[in-house]
Image 1 (cartoon, rainbow, N blue to C red):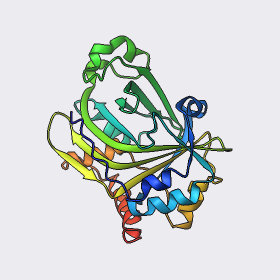
Image 2: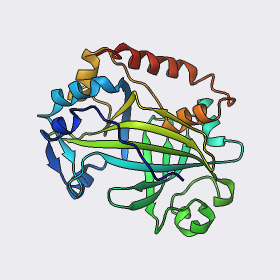
Image 3: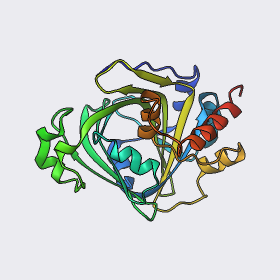
Length: 265
């Protein structure tokens, strides 16, 4: 595990972030939206300052201990045959992801399960861990609370994903928005990694998909369409280049097109 995370942000980002009203973690959790509809978009990092200026009046920004740009460390697990990856690749209607995530700003660690059901809903369950566990069999009792169709012995650590996150809550709508930047993928227990600092991933989280969102309206006005991207699947492609990715290829082309559109913004 590499604990070093380089924060390479636009030069005016801190000044822009200071214009947002802050929201505490306790207040944010009141709109946690564990059962929700998620819509993801991908943009070039150069477009991010313009987006933030446009939405500043409508959203509050999560602040913890004076920090607003939060480092995240996530370790994904899969079977030796990459069942979770291929369930996504092959379009299985119900699919699962298992991960351990450390929120560095609070040093809080969760074991999490994400289920994407046949209705397109994302359901997330999680339990608190006492430490960052890289061997799930050490936490069998906690793992059982996630109700996954796997045992701890079937899941191995596969991929580290590092990034920095901004988390927003709309002031009047039941909506949260996360913005992830400085993405880095690292194959577990190796030095094989891939950094994609130009990419920014925006995720709009609502009880049901709605186009009332100021973020969605901004992106639409800049001809940015949704990109159903999975950090896990994308990272697996980059650090396992021989892994089949036919289904994901159009998505990667679409992401690259959106990023390239505003390269010179």
